[in-house]
Image 1: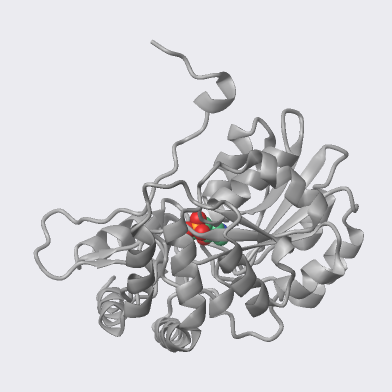
Image 2: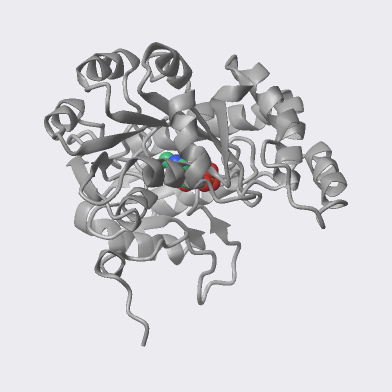
Length: 353
Ligand SMILES: Cc1ncc(COP(=O)(O)O)c(C=O)c1O
């Protein structure tokens, strides 16, 4: 029997959203992983097929064409972009590079399920600061949680799983109080779904504060979850650390080619994002009218704050072919899918009780 070291033993393994339902033979809607429900565009499939033609070779880790196209799109220098095999790998690079044994990493809770795993596998200590009763980041409490051992703070906006955003001006005020030796990570995995003008604008924050990095992904709005393509926008001091902790060759040439093709097809992709945003607002609006507690979401999912009813609602959804993401005793996160999937969610929730 091979024993795990103590700091690994206590960690629950990451659980991906489930994808099947026993005993239901109607249509199944997988709304558990905040994926884009639409299949890849033909131009992206073509680029992927072309790139796959040389997959006997290791990828070019610097992905110059992709980084340069992305830099143009974002208005940052190509050198400021450090790639990751999905933004979860980017987040892992950050934690491994900047927090180790005896260090503390602060993040809101409930938030992205991977944060505790990344922090604990790095041997650091997770400091979880509860969300406010309206499911928002409690920035004052996060400030109060800073100690001399704090090395990294994650700000997840929109927050997974609650969908709530941090206010841009409030984040600036927070950052003015955070010691500049602490790295603040603004995780904007869902930024493309934000239409609230008061929400954090990560790149502006990055330009203003030297100790801030921003995480983005091609998994959500761009629909490339299966190809694993994310990145950190960071200055050279941070990038030097990330270059040491990045998994070599985690970003394939195939993924980078899909990234280039996706940036070239942004107008078409934006139409899908716009549809998902309007569906989100439709579903959340109807659920609020029905009396469900749905915090304002700026992401491609919404949160039902259910407390101890979470398990019962989850069973009810499953019995209607809907696979959501339950957090027992707390709530359920439901991704926005195609209109028929969202209609199925509404019908199921209307018939609960
Ligand atoms: C807040 C947040 N950050 C990062 C990620 C990681 O996404 P990926 O690794 O697919 O880029 C997710 C995925 O669910 C997320 O919710």
